[in-house]
Image (cartoon, rainbow, N blue to C red; front, side, top):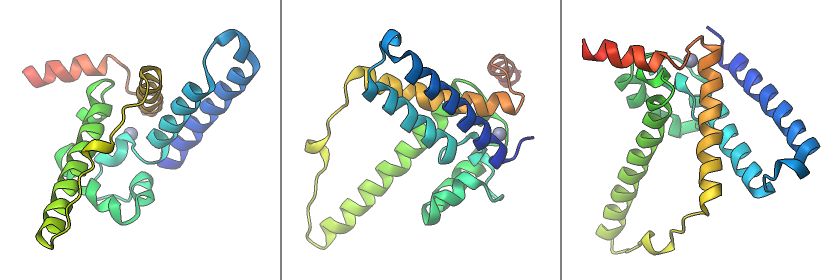
Length: 171
Ligand SMILES: [Zn+2]
């Protein structure tokens, strides 16, 4: 099994080659710079911060360490998902981490709002939320997914693992 360091090296090499290709063929590719940047940013987040190996609750995972104190929030995720189980599938796996972060974020938002409301401070973020343009959103999704897929490939997990996982579940 490749270590976290090896996974990062593989992902960075691929991004390096892709960036060189993008710069060389920019004119004919027709991909705008903000889209390419959004892709790279979310790819890097998926390489260094949100990796499939966060399913290891007890071990020291490089990605978890990068979150600092917030890394503690990933412990329940590791307890919920067995190592290289659903977390290491192609479609649902990356989604479990995004959904998990959404839930934790929402929970923190509610708790902090309740505490602040208790001491008499009212705040509401709802009105300030603006969704980015559609092509940026797709670039973010793709960048994250590609980073996870490279991790899975390096782990020797192929897309057909999803089907096998679903079948195993049904049995
Ligand atoms: Zn892994």
